[in-house]
Image (cartoon, rainbow, N blue to C red; front, side, top):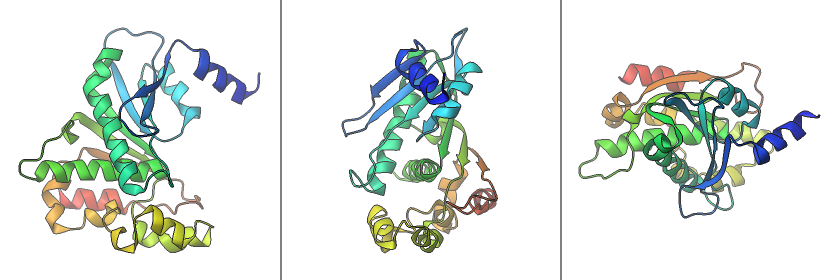
Length: 232
């Protein structure tokens, strides 16, 4: 059986998959849960932002619950909407995963490519919100054991020209990012450098970045995690 058919069969017919769980009121505010076959006790949890069907089954085989969070894409929404959706999805996982056999004390946030950027923004925004007075929130960065970013871009300011050269034209990326004036706000690498964010950065969980050095889509960089460590 071809690999893509196996994936499709697993997704639509496996009893271990809970499909299209609603976590918000907006279009595409859905997540899929992938449960291990043997649920002996509470299981560790991965909240995964975007794609990755080829690794989800592997994690479930190893006794890990995976919540694959979908979110609005452009032009359904811009970066603020995407980050908000991811944050709501993370909140749902943090507050409801025990009902599915997940261990609320072992929740790991993972993002890949654009999802790595969006998840990092959601995590930073939440940390900044927790530093504000009187801010109410449905989840806390303290509920996330660690953040794993795979092939992400964390400095959009420096990536606009790179994306433009590869066909994601400047006008489109600026529309997605809500204009040039918002690029710094949605660049985690830039945000963690800001002295006013020092307290928020200190709240962040352990950060691990994975990136192939031959990646042509997004150049590899470890500055986000290095700057985060320096700010703590």
